[in-house]
Length: 407
Image 1 (cartoon, rainbow, N blue to C red):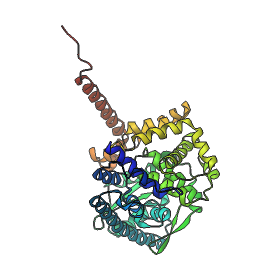
Image 2 (cartoon, rainbow, N blue to C red):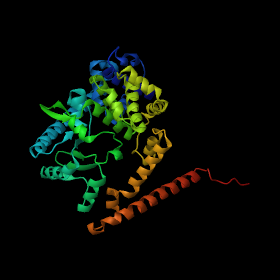
Image 3 (tube, helix red, strand yellow):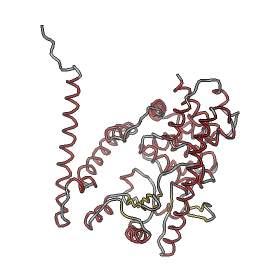
């Protein structure tokens, strides 16, 4: 019961910040039992420590024991120091790339914190993300290496070419700063299920103030689509992703929903978008036009999925997102059989034919034999999933299901 009260309290704290009218909802829960240690663990996992601190500090300082509040405050201040470091590094790199004539869009990280919350203090993030054109990836790589970054993976020339052809990101790490930098290019938008015209995305950029500078950022409409699809891609496992959608709805009242509906016209894309709206409205009281909310409510599949996601939101601890779980979710949001079949064919094609870093590490081959990875990949996966299936059968039998009754 204490855990359930704690979970409700965390949601109420976030609603206090995200909702636009009414009394602070935390007041109705102050009399309930609460587990302060569990509250902190929840906030850390869901990356909402800054928002929890802001709510407690401004609306209900006495809602948690003072030692718990001090811990939350300490994590909040630690996050500020880290975010300032990341923001300074991002501005430095953006200036460097601009000086070399490389167009770049920062997204997520400090740029999104500034865009949504108007402050670097109110969002948690773990790395820096930039979007560039695919033809500029190697130029950016060279500049990052000159600045002390190293590729997170060791790739030879053939492996790197394969990554640029079929991948979506290149990860680098600066050991001195302890910062991860992810270069995205989204070359194959179908792979990401992003229904955006990337050329037009570059033409619709806004400017956002960050750390004394102004940096480019996707428009509110583009960001709404990106946030909803990103959350759906990762099964909406973190409250912070729902908070981002809610905050975008709260601070950008002029979002052109009709245009977004046109961009997300395909059923899977539309449902991912509606799902993000449903979670933001139900959990955090995010505002939206009534006609948009009616479209959400009229989609019974969306409301059913949202109900299940809300019920499972606090099922901790979360392990790595499994491929089976992801596939089941993606099939669920597709109504038509041909869409489900098309998704399965696409995923099987990518899964079985695109070599991964795990392939390179488990079976090192000279660059001259790189093409053998296209043979190794399906063999490795077949063996892996066959072994997993046999282990499940073994566990099933071991549990007594297959025991034969005698005597």
